[in-house]
Image 1 (cartoon, rainbow, N blue to C red):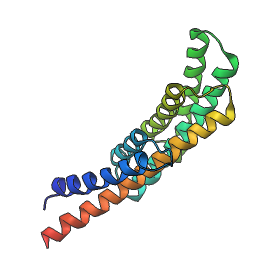
Image 2 (cartoon, helix red, strand yellow):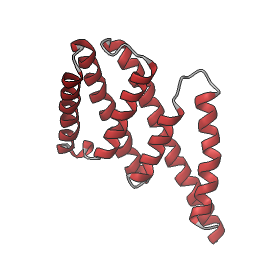
Image 3 (cartoon, one colour):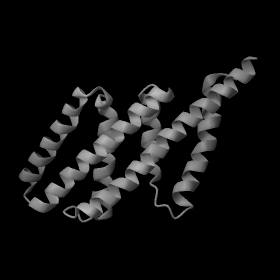
Length: 166
């Protein structure tokens, strides 16, 4: 079996499992964040290295977004003030890339954007650190699982493709 067909089978089957895990349980996992991270796993090159780079940078993005949201919530400023605070937080996000383990900027942006979106779209009290941190935790866990699903799907696809080559 060629690799594309093997990936289609492994990703499709695991997508059903991931969707059930997010929607069919009471864990509160976010299927969209899981899928963003799954794509990020492949985008960062896959394998153990892609899993590590993607997951670490998702966490970094979520941490920066959490701090930014709390500050924005505490300041309660205008659109101009909020925009300046978001801009400053993104500067910090990107400057993290000076550290080699935070150098996968797109994955950090996925973590930042997913955390901000979840908080803002679900009405989390953004000035409340505990509330934002709890929401960020849900996003981070969902994203780490997405990276793990990516890793597993890659391994299964590789085995399926290798089996048919033999």
